[in-house]
Each structure stands twice: as C-alpha cells, then as structure tokens.
Image (cartoon, rainbow, N blue to C red; front, side):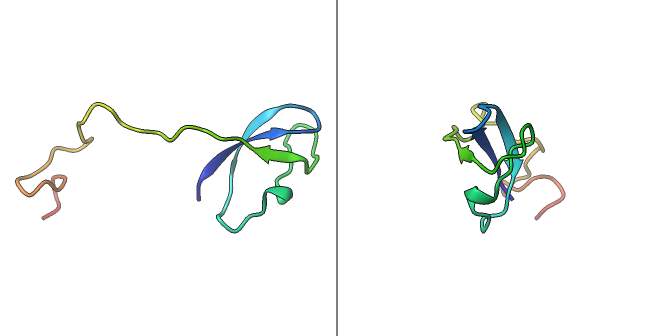
Length: 67
C-alpha cells in the first residue's frame, strides 16, 4: 500500500497516510481535527541517484544469494 501526503482543508495541517488503492480520498480523516476534508497532495517520487544496489550483485546482475 502506498503512502500519500494529504492536507486538511479544514485545519490546514499536512500529514502522511498509508492507504490502499481502493480507498476514496473522501474517506481520509485528518489525525489533528478528525474532519474528512483532506485533499491528496502531489509529491515527487523517490528515486535513487547513486547507481549502486544495497546488496552486491553476482555475475548475472542479481543480488548475492539469488541465481
């Protein structure tokens, strides 16, 4: 399930919410004021720019322990 950024249109606070793909934004309740007036914000995706994997790769390009 993805984490989305929301802003409450009632109190103005921003918060993150773990939601399923089938969840309607009108169901998201603000954790600060408990109103269901939250709007999903547009956020940039997380991208790795260092070009290195966390686990060393073997000769076929898979992480060690995988063949």
